[in-house]
Length: 504
Image (cartoon, rainbow, N blue to C red; front, top):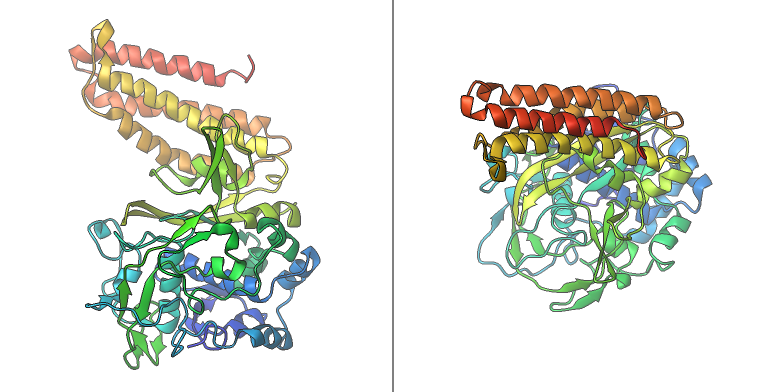
């Protein structure tokens, strides 16, 4: 199966209809509107990212004008055929010598089942997810390619002795999607996340390493130390840190992933441990990066979900660029940064996805779609203030509830001894996750003061209500009356400080 030629993309018509699989040419050269159709949101995001990467390396727009044209008009058949002509067999999943995202000649004693490629489907933490039974039993070529790509680039490694991707074990991926239904289809979404030639040259220090081969055609040498600056666009986007080889496929049947009939399906693969190292950070265009100064040196890493806090708490890191000084710096994903100028007046949907993990174990799958109103491109200070307000009220509530939970020993005030502050924080995040994303979707960034004041009032009331709600079961305990009074006074003092305009 060749990703550039055959039907493998799992979709359904945007207007509604029967799911099917289509070819890349049908997707990019047709006016028909499609959306991805897979049973898991992380696999849909990975499929979108894979399609973006294919389009990026083959049809990189030469400038902003060309990109706008690609968004508005499908590729012609001639453009498509000319584009793929230089990539014969490069993206063939079952190539006899250099199969897509694989290493030929893996030595392994046991066959690993395909469900190990689907993040969070098996393992000690899989009970935290809702998975259809048998989802990884036998995957068609398209679902197999998507799973290989996702495991190599987005998910934690197989465990000890296996490497994670260039962005680390569980990076946050951010991609853009239009809000207007006319432009929210799959073809348009792909082009919204493709970088132009000048932006790519700026991102990769003007050296795209265009003649590099992908890792399955020019394998990484065992024990090698690879400078990140030596990794070109193609090699970086389709990085494969693992030695994986698919076992021969079985015959015709239904794919356990997308549900489509397939002429051949994959039920297992071989894997072996393989060691190398990468020096530095490769600037992957689909992930925000965090900058920290340690001992006078700026260290850079990709953003990851490390807590269960909602995505709005990260929105500054996702949208706003800030240089590292005494505090943390951050850089949005390149596709988001490019949109700031190329689509400078657009209202956008930000697709945010990733995993929260503990080493090789996946604790949580994250997938959010956040709408940001037009004006975010030129008013980063408003985005920072929204996040600051939201986190400030959370901290006020948590501190007050912590006093009630732990008491104040030096004042001989006995606490409840129950972690009500944890419960309060969880409930704050749950309810604020309705308020703050709605604000970001509707706020007038040029006249934000009134909206920000209303946000403060809403969060102020939320904190008071949650404090009373969380402490209510304990308020009749005579030994806790003093702790409750001190905690309530602390809350109102902090809330009063938060209501004051900055600078007063």
